[in-house]
Image (cartoon, rainbow, N blue to C red; front, side, top):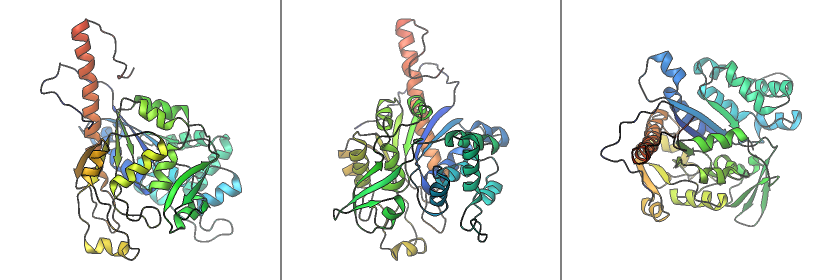
Length: 370
């Protein structure tokens, strides 16, 4: 079982670069995680006088949405779906309260405008002006003073296809999510699509790579179907953590335990792409669970022994938020992940110092950053 060893005594070393965390996913789960991590960024700490560890954030975001405002813009303007990217921009923006109201504002009237969010229109307009969606996201990040970098998992215009438990095939994320049949397999169309070089570089240089929380088959796995991303994760020296979901998702993951989620990810990625699973031990109250009970959705069971049999380290924490919907509490989740990133970075420094002590070399370890 992989573990992170923390020696009792370390050489006198000091890290001069931020902890680098790459978070892969989409939907509400990814934006929730980013909201917690933002408090550790240099921009936020300068503003608030914090002494927390400094974190450098990269988000790699799925771009397969084909419903609602995103789907309409995708079909009418031939731009990638902006919705999940928009949520990440808001989560990492300097003035989240204002930006949330502005970017999440949805027009309730107006021919052609009704149903669109302002943030989706903003990103789509910039994409048309620049001719490149990735550049549009980068410019948006500058305009909004975003603490971190946000990359789509691919620049290719991709859609999802699912093979269901009954053998039928379903096209498109919206139809897949609406189906109540179990999902056997998910794939991208086109099958071969290239990742962004910047995303691969971030994975290579990371101290910690996170996957989840989020919809298993429509937010997490699609990123791992992009050519080269699973291999880059496997090659990275980072700690790799899967944040287990809190509840079953009707249709997608009914009756799934944490180990079922993990096995589905490994099967699709073709590799064991993480070494650690973070599971929640908090218990939701009856009021919180009521809305889920109507859909026969239950909490995801953290079957620890089954996870360990897969060769994984399991970290158990109470991560449950107090909101009406059952969600991870951003600050609690971020604190655990930043600690894991710090452990990995300390191990890198310890390894470099040990090599230097034996060889007398002053060369930098390949695990450290220029």
